[in-house]
Image (cartoon, rainbow, N blue to C red; front, side, top):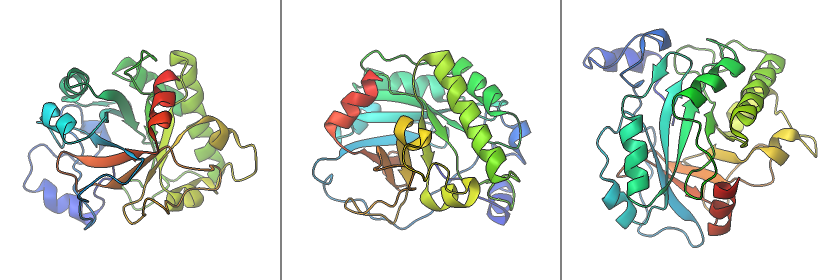
Length: 261
């Protein structure tokens, strides 16, 4: 779910008509994102982990039947970003994943410097993030990580303001859907931009909101996580997958638990 930043975006945009200068102009074209690591896909899924994918308009044509036959059991689809962007491919991808027999869910890419957490949660819910616990729909996701549109990875927010923004989004999503959203982030960002929020035992973050970690250098036995959590729930291990970014849910029982929440 990571995005290109800075000069690389400028170079790519010179040759891509779908790319635009900033979040306010995007509605029908997804922000440009490309693989950023050199991970090699394994021959088999590590024992006990449940394979899945996450996709956006960067992968406009997904053969969901093949994704399912390759071993994937779930898919997350980008629905929104900020309060001005809706993925033009979301509806087709969301339905395609479900029709192929995959558990499916929606995610929102946060831009905390453009509008409040409450407004972005409302926008997400209104544009695909309102899925209920029905046995095949996963809880929504707040994807919050490096700012791809500026030099300040923390969007210019202090720790206190960032923590308030995140809490506002999560609380509004809970109020609107009755579900607890997952938090998609990575350890270094969480420490730098939230001040390692929730590090104390009993943290509302770690105790309440499942963690999705983006870490392409981690291994199944060693996935670095912020200290607010005891373990990850979902792990994006590569953005070089055949069908999109590839992820693992920690176990079949964890997947079952997510679908029930």
